[in-house]
Length: 146
Image (cartoon, rainbow, N blue to C red):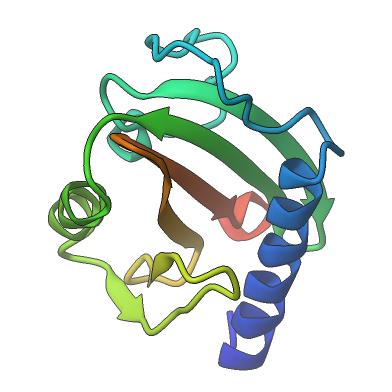
C-alpha cells in the first residue's frame, strides 16, 4: 500500500472516530460505564494481539474500503495513556511505525505490518479521573492476502 493511500486511510479513521464520539455509528462513551472485559463476539474482527486486556468495550464499527474492512474499536480502561501506548509499542515492535497525531490532544501511534497488508492506529486520551479512552483502528488488506 503506498504512503498516500495509507495517509488517506488514517484520515478516514479519524472521521470514523469523530462519528463514534458524536453518537453516530454505534454509540459513544458514557460517563457512568463500568469497565468490563469486552464480549469476544463483538471483538471477532480484531486480532487478539490488538485487544487491550481488561478494557471495557465502548463502541465498535466496521466500514468497507477498497483495501478491505476498516474496523474501529473504542475501549475504556483505568490504565494511563502511557501504559496503553507502551503496550502497543511492545506488541507491534516488529511493525513499521508512522508518526501520528490527534486533533483532540490525545496521543496516537500508527503502524503497518512489514508487508504493508495491515495497518493499525491506536489513539489514547484521558477520559476523566483514572480513565483512559483508547481507540484501535485496524485495516487488514484481505483482498491482497494469499
